[in-house]
Amino acid sequence: MRHFIRSAAVAIAMAAASTITLSAAMAADLSGAGSTFIYPVFAKWADTYKKDTGVGLNYQSIGSGGGIKQVIAKTVTFGATDKPMSDADLEKNGLVQFPMVMGGIVPIVNLSGVKPGELVLDGKTLAQIYLGAITTWDDAAIKALNPTLTLPSTAIAVVHRSDGSGTTFNFTDYLVKLSPDWKDKVGSDTAVEWPTGVGAKGSEGVANTVKQTDGGIGYVEYAYAKQNNLSYSKMVNAAGKVVEPSLESFGAAASNADFKTAKNFNVIITNEPGDTTWPIAASTWVLIHKVPDDAAATGEALKFFAWAYKDGKETAKALDYVSIPDSVVDLIKASWKTDIQADGKPVYAGE
Image (tube, helix red, strand yellow):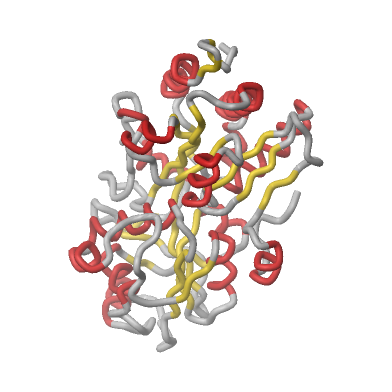
């Protein structure tokens, strides 16, 4: 299994960020592309699934935008995105979507003398940093949130995603909800016109750039920060409480996700209420064709997802992802049978 986080040089040399390639190319192997947010758990799932079934997974962790493009172009069997597609775009492209996991996005920092979880930030201050209005770590706004920390006068080096990214969508969606200035000047999408900072490709690129830059700040899926011992910040949530990123705080945000009544399972879970809720929570959706050209490959992909929902829960939990509730999984599997068909018959024959 390849390391989740590669150096920037290796990533550039490979020309595409992180690819899970767990066996030689075979007709039976699964192919997918997209979200870097889900990459750590996809990699673990794929390793176990290969051992259990002999079926490998080639997943290109190239960002949600790239995954959407590839599944529309039919160069992969499925895409993965942290920004759900609109009803109109799903219909236009003959796709269905369903959620795979939920988790948390965390600000990561490289600040001398500050350990993981010591720094506290809130949405308003984070927006001001990414707007370029707060430029040093000893700014009064940051000091007010961290009265017991000795903060250096180091310049803040803002790092953001350079590729189309669902992680960026959820991060900027959160900033829109907390900052009128951000809403007016930047907005929210998978790619935005960043007022300041440098871009890096994928969560891997952001993590590596921050790690190598004194005073750096970025945003990644929590697993990247945790596995690489990157310093992350606590956050002030919608209830005004300081919270740590954790399975419990992500689960508190996920508890508000009403996938049962949402059309096309389209639910955004940033800045949800609750004393223990992590404010920058996100989901990843799988995209797959309603009428696939290769019904056998699509059927194999759905078998993998069904296995992940049932047998991948502990792996997801160990990486601090929140599993999709069984009641929602039942709805998802039912939708497969009615919405994903070839020659008038469902391509998924499972329970």
